[in-house]
Image (tube, rainbow, N blue to C red; front, side):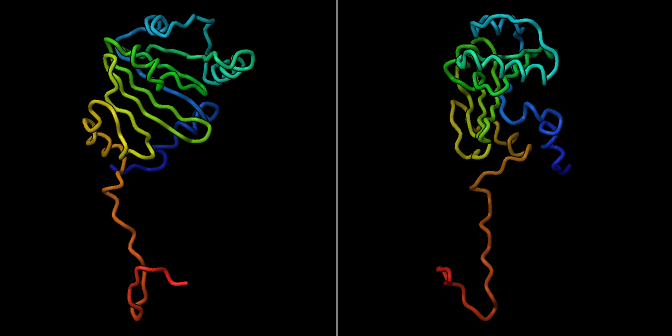
Length: 179
C-alpha cells in the first residue's frame, strides 16, 4: 500500500481550527475523571465539537494565560485529551507523574510548526523525539519502535541517500562549486 497526501492531510482538512496548534494525548485504561485528578484540574461545563473547544481554550487564555483547557473523551478503553494551543501532554513534569500505572502517548504541534512526540509508561519516558528529526530520539527505549516508525513513513537521515550532483559529460567532477 502506498501512502498519499490524503493519508497525511485529513487532520488539517477536517479540523483546520485545531490543526495549527494542538496537543493530542492518548491514555489507556484510565477514565477522564481519573486523568483530571492526576492533572489536578477542575471539571468545567461540557463542550461539544472542535470549534467550541478551540474557542473556549482561547477565551480562557485572555484573562489568565497560565490556565489551559484540556478536553477529554473516552474512546473504548482509552481517553483522548485534546489541548488547543496546549502542551501539557508532552510536558514531562506533568506527563511523567500522570503516566504512573498506565501509558501516556502525546503529540504536540505549535503555531511555528515545531512538533514533539512523547511516549511515557509508568512514570518513565520511553521515547521522545521531534517528528521532523526522528534520528534524535531519547528515553529508556528510544529504538523499540523503529520498525513501526518506518512503516508509517519516518525516514532517518542515515538512510537518506545523498543527492547526486549533476555534471556534464565533458566536465570533470569537482568537489568545489564553480563560480
